[in-house]
Image (cartoon, rainbow over all chains, first blue to last red; front, side, top):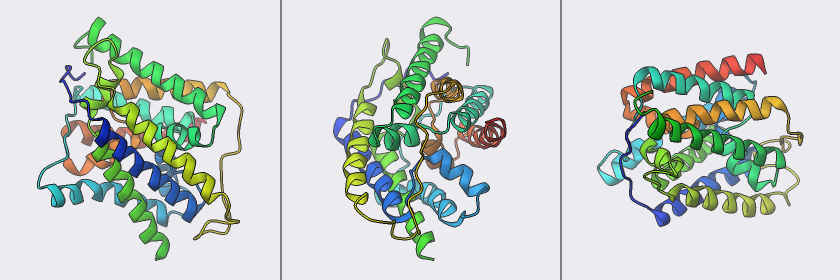
Length: 146
Length: 135
């Protein structure tokens, strides 16, 4: 796991970014009538009938850092931690967990909470708690494990 | 064509939001989760800003009889809290805590091509396919 690199507290940028994410979720609902859950969109892009807009949405996600670089002249700040086996395990768990639990940070988190869904709230509290416990164990109890 | 353009723009907006907010940086995500250590509460502002904006926007959109580019709204209907939901969320949380990536930020990080991301994204896609098959 990534050693603790201090990061700046950025309430305004984070609030602004959150509002952009919310506007995108509203756009998906207004135009396509659907929840903007990234896992649902990703799974739909490879499986379901109406794949076009979902593939285009992922194209937009991929284009965002490139546009960011054109606009600011630098890479978005990003430090990927964990060892490569750690990242492989993390990716598998994130994929299986979000598919099995029908949603991720955007589907259950942003969209589900905005719909006042108790089901989504239960998912959010569960994944937040498990993530915080995992970070606690890897940073403070078993440093160097992943 | 309209759908593709609209889908692309929505994804671009989402991705720019992830980058601006700091959510696309695993170091920041892990620090948010590290309440006992280098705690950075920024991501609470991301979730707050996104959820409140979505709540207000959904209330406005709901007045329409149908979405602009589709015949009808297609929303999740389940309300029950069952074992697969909680087991899935728990597995997701553990993976999120190890890598600092949830699915959206993992996609936006892909073009920067860090080795960890190049391992994470295919593993995540494999996991999604496997998880769907089991669910």
